[in-house]
Length: 330
Image (cartoon, rainbow, N blue to C red; front, side, top):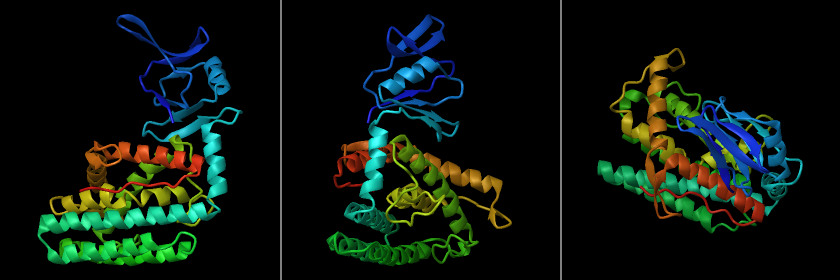
């Protein structure tokens, strides 16, 4: 999927000589950049960018989406052409395939990668802490992943996938609890718990949800139609599915590493303002940190990996091919 980003304030998207151009004044005069006619989407990343109705019409005639982002980088509006383009094809395929065996196969992949990435983090922690019990827990979590991987797509149900996911999670979070300082009061993962680490996880996951949903929307997917999480009105099920691959690496790892050197406080039943800023900085810094990405054989920012995976998921759905997601290397 070819994306053209426009982010410089003061730019204008206009039509010149039958093409779409980005025009901006600078100290040397007027700079013009042509938008290639074969792009799939134009991303408008500033409220101080102007666009003419003529440019919108020409983009639509070429099957080009125009996506408007807010100051956080979250899509707030999208102009779809009336003709069928890649975004429309992607969503039609998503609606059709998710009700079939493809949906079970995809749910299995999301859950499998969640589990193997949890095991990878435990191996990393076992090595850095020199804890044999943590290494053994990593082996147990990996064994659950292997059990899931060996299950036949046509014979395993979504409920059975969730049961294996839950079994791995129990081992994983019990092990994390044994690593964290006892004074934190963390005994396991619970969204409703009032201990400081569970609150930090909730806040960190919120940032990750936003990053993943933004990437899915830009890739042309419907974040509300998922496979592993139950589809309900107002619930971004695909976002919750997609985020599973990244939780342990994007949020758990940096919070576990930093919680001993950071003082977090609560205000009532939530993190106080300063603690929220601290957690946000920890998670956002990690998203901007380079991680090994085996699919291209080099290190790239984790936020870029998430965007690449969203594009790859959209392509796999359009073509009805098996999706192979993100496997972390620590």
